[in-house]
Image 1 (tube, one colour):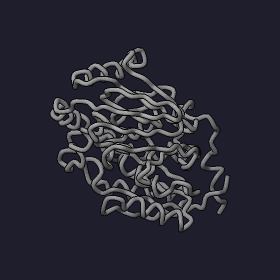
Image 2: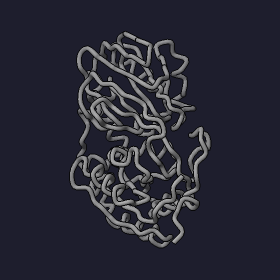
Image 3: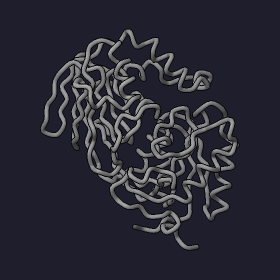
Image 4: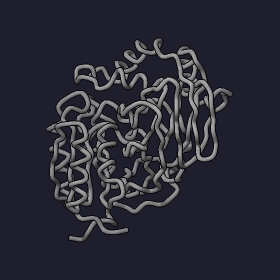
Length: 328
């Protein structure tokens, strides 16, 4: 594994999360500078900007991109770093931090003002892993999920959220989702997973590359690995929206695998066609309507994994960050 240049770009979304994170970001930069890193701060000012900034950092030979934001910011940065040697380091400051929970990282907490120091400490003591990415046929990469059905329907109606609404957190999001839920009537879908074809009436079709779901509040995919070269494709059958509530309870108790109306397949290629055409999202960001197709790209992103991450998230061993840095 090549050594990393001790140069980092810290990309932050000034509108992520509840409050202005400018002071926090500056203090994070100081933390890394005190440990020998040259840090450049870059604020995003429009959708897709984090992808451009991340790509610029990789082309400039920076060893690390610190991505301060939620799952949406991480998705944009991953799109700029896919296939490069530059490492992505997640700094959760958004309202939706599913990937942070996946990795065991502390999430923003107003009652623990130095939580970001804990995050940085876990990262600087962490290791570099190569993780799988999904690539959609629209050219977009994704880290967590490509999904349609009830979640795509809700995401399109809830996002983007104004900052005042983000301050309501997960409870506010759930309340608004429940408001829209009765108007979702399910969909007729044909799902192809490698050489398998499944048809039926579904409430949710989720192509997953991780364990967590619903902003990190539910564990959908216990035992999934981030570098095994396979998607898990979850199909939740049904036509009526109250069934969604039953599925939510089952996922909460991790009993959904026992439901005969829930199926899971594994594969490297997935195509989804629905009737009617339905919104879908990548990593919680609405990107269009069905149909869509995804291909798995094995070990396509270098990720800085904190020392607090579950040991069984990966098949392959990682390389400690300290051993990957260039000696000054």
